[in-house]
Length: 384
Ligand SMILES: [Zn+2]
Image (tube, rainbow, N blue to C red; front, side):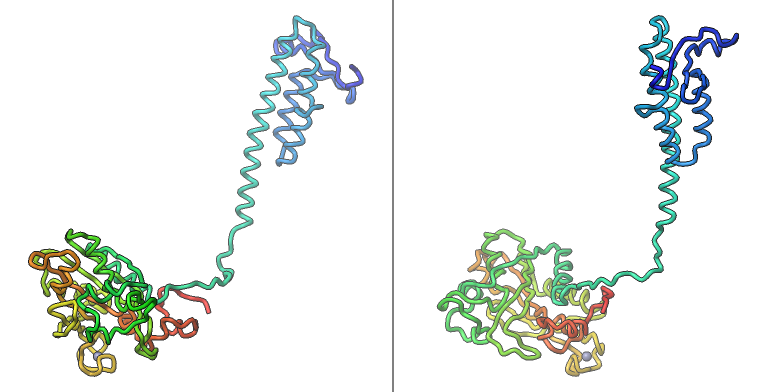
């Protein structure tokens, strides 16, 4: 036992006062030739705890008292050497010492850890004046942006945005829109045929209107816009393209009139081109509407005085529209004697060209970033 470095034995009397009497057990430290009772150990812990300055020193204390060879651990292991009638008291004394040490150890550990964290946070502050790493940002295609803007306005008026196939049947693209086979109106919409004469690339988004009405099975109201790609057999130049985007709209309900159409168009053009822009209708002709109109807006550029954009007329044509032809309603399952509706179609590229002052339609489909940046929308500050 002596070889372990500690010897426990009962001393009985160390002094006359109660405090000493309660600490009957003495730790005889052979190494240091020092006799200590538990109260002395507690006092030493107290002194050392007061002096400890950081986590490292605190951990050293932990090793000194509570490691496998630590003083408190050793004391505990000597319980077997204590006379039976004193074992309980001895055990309580050692436990009390262990609790005392642990409480102080945990308190100081939390304190030092917090101090360490704070000093780290202080030393690792971010210097916001340092230049950042450049990240190139993308921005939406200008056509996409315009279409989304239009969609939002119509959705706020209760419209649904619907989609349809680009590879379409002749039936939906022409026949059910009151353009039978051999009709001269087809000439202006010559398109690409995929298979025979029946499967084609749609020349307009109107077949989506037909499909929507058929799906509606006579239910009202029908309120949709259908933006999408369309195709025509055209030679590409600054104002023509074999592929372009249309934004068509359809409303079918009871007692719908041209006045409703005008009010609706007015909302969208004011949103896109400014509050002071006015709308006018001119008579026109389409197979699928009756009556049909051309939609003009007052020139947002010159306010009617005359400029290049409006070709010195003060007005710009932006859409075709009209009241849905009774034949179209009937073919799609709506009785024209009960229901009426309007339809309109904008060219998305034309709208974007006007809005963003673009003079070549091909720019929308160009992948040259230098060109695209010429009409940067300014909503995202981009890096070069
Ligand atoms: Zn003008």
